[in-house]
Length: 263
Ligand code: PGA
Image (cartoon, rainbow, N blue to C red; front, side):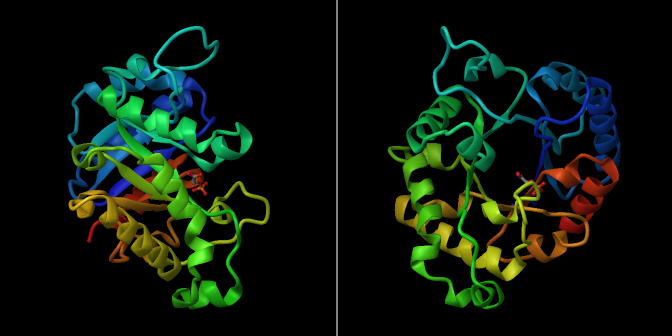
């Protein structure tokens, strides 16, 4: 499996900034065949960025959306339904902690979104992560991580993938993002590679309980990843890639992360 790098631009960039950023990343990726990259720009820029990507396309660059609504279509002012992304995005981020926290998204809504994404040919990037900060001991020696500390993460996972078939599960991508480590969280702390790897191991074990083909499901890490700490996360045995927020808004820093991901 090639390392997978997701750029979550969140609600940032003007149209011209987004086009420059997408073109810059595309240019830099042209000779980085060893990674797969998914750009997730804001909705209004998707159409224009598809055009950038279709001009001399490179196979390692893909497009994702940052969200979908939990209904297919109808009277839901301001929302975007999964069928609308046809031809625009191959992937969609679902259950990001900002959506859970700021928009009060529930596990049931997230479950419905995952099903809709799959039904409309989109690969969901399911975000899960605990809010509770680890103790200093848990952070330095993740083998001391208690089952209770990780329970919310496994609960979010179990709720989101309820009832999925083995073939649907294989289309899933998991992004483990401890909320306390996301750069925009107040007093964000950075996790470390061992900690992220330990939780990823527990996620893999939970996935194995649900499907025989759990190893087909990539588990990414996200939370304050930048060019200085990317290598520490990306080369952990149980992690298959990174979900990058702030550091994906500059082509140079995102490309530096991509370069470091090549084993
Ligand atoms: P960050 O964002 O890299 O800026 O911490 C990651 C995310 O929220 O997905």
